[in-house]
Length: 475
Image (cartoon, rainbow, N blue to C red):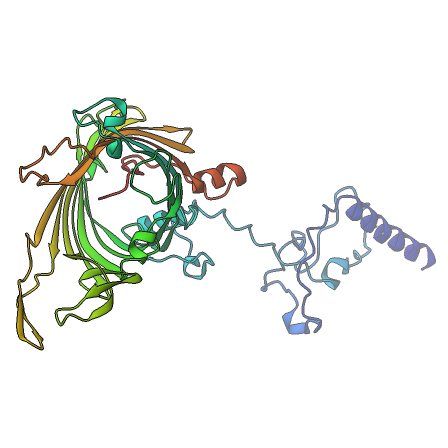
């Protein structure tokens, strides 16, 4: 018995050592298994499949594990010892396959896209969402500029026949135009803007009371809603485009002339339509397209009186013969209403060099004073009504060449003629020239572009088919 027991023990130890030497590396740790031990009925049997990874039973020995290759066989007539070690611990469950990488977002949207932290104005289509993200990379205050204008009358340069000293004027004009987009959707945009500036005349004409006097200009506050109505698609995508806008503008009397004449403010509003038409296309070096803008604007003046009044007052004799203090500065009515119709055309000539021209008709309407009778001690003193016309038309013509310098500064060299349609002699003036015509040079600093280049923020790639923005102001 002792010898037989030794043989059995040696065979069991040899089998365990060989099996341990050929066991593959253990898989990564699995989640903790249920600590409840297996019941006898749950253990694998001949009719129950073994756990995944457990060794198969040896042929001819139901339920018994096969001996490892190379293990010494049991002695003849001696029953093989059961190797219960593999069955004592259940095999770890099979590890799940790693999930496949998600496809690119451009091809298949993520199932959790609705929970994205990116705020979008319009989530109706994927195209609008992409454009909206592009819009979020730009600055909300883009379009903010500072312009240094240098203007001189044509008579100062020897152009024209009238060379009186009062008409030879040269001066500087500085204007800050901040702009901010309240709503910035791909097709709908609402922006707020302002104009704050001052001017100084460097010649000695009668435009100011003192020599080289610096004066503030009227400050303007504006709001605009712009909507893209239509844009071409296909091979001509973006080459044809129609936009519409509604503008609101409030002008405050911050200049000495307006402040001292009894003005409160001027309220103006009107629609505007812009049409882009393809010429040679966006891929050409020049004459890519022509952009025409038609605008109509109505303005009304709110003031203390129809006539200009202010100052310290003057002593005047009333119809009754009494002397009274009067603040009325003139007997003519101010233009209480103005209707402006303008047409502007922008044409890129070659690369960044562009030509801009505009035509305008400014129709001023004055108050019509009625005649009456002033009652005095001796009776009635009749007086007449308005003298002169109550409709005063003005014409405006502007043409300029502009060129951007590294997108930071825009240079514009132009000619402007804004004057009364009727001259002092009662004859109609030329639409393109008058003694009030001027040559000018505009140096405009794009403050938002400067900020983007310095800080690297707010940059946005140019999109094909998008019309180049024009810095020239409207009439």
